Image: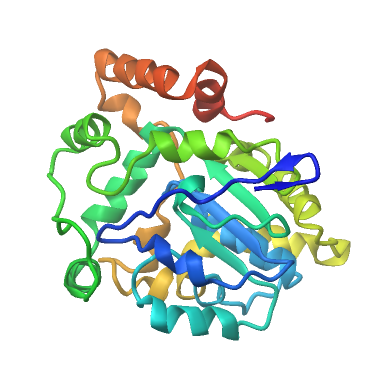
Amino acid sequence: MSKGNVTWPRKTRELHNHHFDSTIWNDFKFRDDDIIIGTYGKSGTTWSQQIVGQLLFNGDPDIAVSEMSPWVDLRVPPKAEKLPMLEALTHRRFLKTHLPVDALVFSPTARYVYIGRDGRDVVWSLYNHHANANALWYAAMNDTPGRVGPAIDPPTDDIRQYFLDWLDKDGFPFWPFWENIRSWWEIRDLPNVLLVHFNDLKSDMPGQIRQIAAHLQIPIDESRWPAILEHCSFDYMRNNGEKTVPLGGAIFEGGAKTFINKGTNGRWRDVLTAQDTQRYEDMARHELGEECAQWLKSGGGV
């Protein structure tokens, strides 16, 4: 799809599993000012939603981003219920996706923010998420009508084995990793796309939030800047998880504080062997190329 000198991404396939129904995007009606927050998952998605919500609503402590920023391609609730819900949102919409670009319908007028994170850190956060999922979570993912493919089972107790299975089977038991990163990296130069790295958000949250605000064309009220920063901190989000976490954390043992976890990188260093680490890094370079693999590992400007 071309417009002027820009070639826009085109949807070429559907993705279905215990979580996904990518066909929801086919019938979604974009608005010109929509914001789409993309990640592989456990890469700072909820954090990014909180940041955008705080920018849009000027540091309001009472907004509930878990309700205001739906995950479009999640198959629960089904498309017939979700599309009217999305259409009913009256504020500037900021929506979440975990799809690769080629499974999305892409809008030239929407604004996209994609968050990347080292895959090893992703898996450690993903394991916490998966290991603390409760019966409500499994019922939603496995038992509601419309699931395509196998059910998702509880994880092994061995986190190293969990990582190796994820690496060997490309994202098992969730969804493929490398194609997700690669597809967003390939469109990083589009005028409506911004790539942000989790590490950079951690090391310079104020600077990264200002960059996100500029990309989304949201003016910052400097008098509310301290409140915006406070409400985007991990401590604040953990302590107010009923507003930031899906269903207020009801689908996780320990609730919202379990979901938010620590936002800590590098926990894999004490578990993975040198050979494990080298395998991952070799695979990252093979799948992504040197430049993208280095960005995914460390962050830095794109």
